[in-house]
Length: 263
Length: 268
Image 1 (cartoon, rainbow over the protein chains, first blue to last red):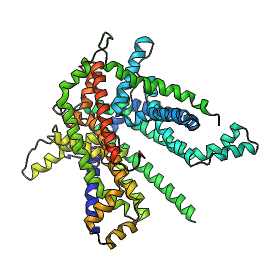
Image 2 (image 1 turned 90 degrees about the vertical axis):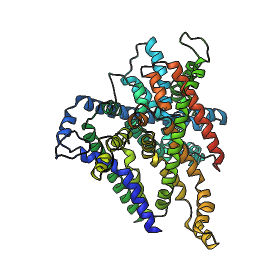
Image 3 (image 1 turned 135 degrees about the horizontal axis):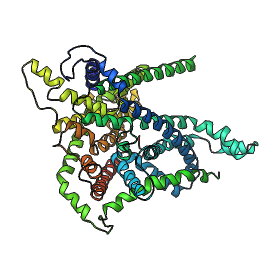
Image 4 (image 1 turned 45 degrees about the horizontal axis):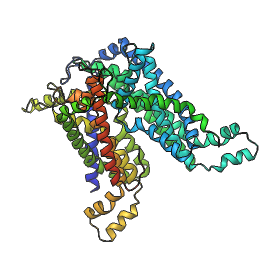
């Protein structure tokens, strides 16, 4: 039974990894063929780095992800504090609306924002591009920040804040010294979640970006529409490499922390 | 605590960028180009009933395959030693960190008429088979992209099932099948329901997977919506109506799913 389980797991992993493996192999392929490996080359990598559209959309993606995740972390942390202090009914209303971008299919969030931006574009001087992308990203990021922080309030003793004030803290310093450290793990995980969702988002960006400003996934999509572009293979290999390195570093750090705790 | 005011910026943001856009979908769905009230858009959605049925059908199949495939994976993971669990889970989730466009593109390379699979089949004298641009390819793409969405919630529920509960079941005379269906499945029900929603919702609303792997003949609801907003068929009123119907379908299915969930806790 145990052996059977291992074989099954190996098969599923094979299924999950084989497409990525093939992409990596063909990123070094000399010809444009997608089935025959004719010789080793690094040409596609060279072409990738000379491709201005890819480089500029990569820079754009990182700028938007950094800005959107920072803004949504601030906005979401303040929101969570306020929502936590609300009475039952307004709290339920706000939380239900906050959940909408998470529950709704991405395409619905995307087209709903597009409708709004089209409306503004017709009446004000709004162009589809950086600003609309940033607004869209903040909009789908904030709910994740709020949802990461809210449980921390539930775990916290509500009397701590009052006790801090009884002991001479003003409301602001009581918040900084007592409440913030308690909710910090939620703030950090919310920020990281927002950042990764922003980096990875395609659907909502697709509906809210313009020709002046695009994110990497949108550029990748337009590349896949063309027949064969082995630069995508090279790009995938690089992204995969970066992801593997980040996850290994993260795991090593976590393992060290666990050992420290044990010691 | 008088802290309500600090959420004011977010409440404004939420109203303008979440609530108003969703209301605009409803307004667009029930108005015509000149702004008058009409139910013509909703009626027009009926013309696309076949696309709706195809989307529901393909995403139901993909969700079912994901469940069957993921269940043993999550169980095996949850029974491993603690330190190996973390590593294995990371290995299982790692492909998810690649953008899903690239993952889908990878299958285009594999399934294409001149692709790797057909090339290998050719070497042993079979084919070429028509693999890409079929509904099977679309289902495969959905399963591949969303399988981890099923594994994760199942795993997080199963890891909480105490080993001694399973041992007790077999001590009390349950065979392995009875243990599975009378102990493990009922205890993992919250994971099953949240896994199903996490796979079904993106599957039914995708437009990339069908576009890249289904060719032109396997349009899904997502493609239909996209065409109304960014395609040649530009008609945001019809697009809004289709989006509205899609939201209602998902709402109905999620309500049904929640009936099976023993507690109202939603896993994300």
